[in-house]
Length: 501
Image (tube, rainbow, N blue to C red):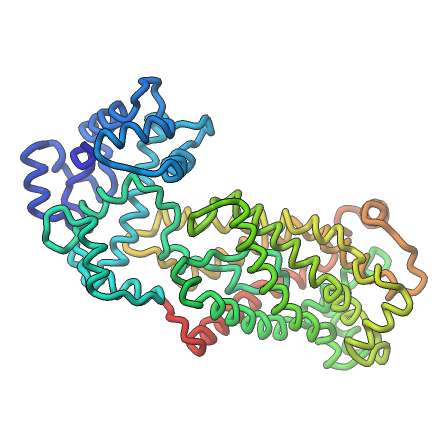
């Protein structure tokens, strides 16, 4: 029943001739060209309607989890309740807990497109069939080694005609009503939070495939990302310090431009002063990344997902909580970074001296100044970064992904840069208030202020523009930071033995 509904057109990947012949004999209309996606013609829509009615066991015009369970069981297809629930969630656009006919058709079309990308990535010989050697090679690329017997066992589960190869029709028929939310190829190609470091580590962590976690490739990715972040932050440190100085000292009465800010810093402490605060900024990468990754994995388990990846809203919740835990753990280093960036020549002999003096003069509470706006800033930054990146990624996959899910370097860099920039723009007022609160004691005579009173003071004295002081150098560093971190990341991957796709 399911096979008779699906397209048997001559499209890329080419279907099996024998399968096409038998299908065309039983259903002449099914050989009309479709352009490669699920057929959109009237005959095919009638066949989809027939399948929909077969699955709609209670005849209410919608497919709920129970309908799918009973209907698919009658067709000889057995799926777990969890799998069926994910099918409904993936296609349920109006959130009524079931799929109407239009949602059902849209789900099949979108799902088949993803399956086609995977099929083409597995079809190394580009002959329209997958054999045991191609399965072994593809898994080897993911870091998993299996025997030929294991590969043949995988083939037999999908092979209908006993040829020990899988054509497009067999692949699609087997997987179409499986809730494949995550495609390893897309995860591998579209990592961005591990690769891109723009100085703010508030992004939602990347997903790793089961194979990457089992083979230890995940820690190599994290080490490569950490090394790339260290180089990127060091190269863009002058712009980062200028941003901090402008956030704290610029005002209507002290209008500070980029050239003037650099001139002032060099005049006060020489060229080396441009890198003040960079040491602690680099040191905090390792503990923050490690804590965030471990927290993210634990939160995923608490959410109860048994899938390789979470849905978008689940990723946002898990990523934001993991970010909050990581930031809470290393927040004293954030305060130290701000104080070191703002210090005058000779004020501190080093990081430890700075920490000692803060503790002696202001107490332990000083290391958590600005903590509340920092925590509040995680949600808009992570949420908008994730939403924009996923929107751009899905738009590219829908429009341009024909033979591969690989977006290429330029598209990946562009999407990462745009999403990060949008995230920073949304959370920037909170970041500015956080920095001013962290810097309070470094400014002699500065009164103790709260987050709300500081917001009111800035709006009253400087207007809304005052909440965006230092935004120009912050945005100036995004493109070089992303580019440098990507280049270093790719080279470190090779050094650490991570295979590039």
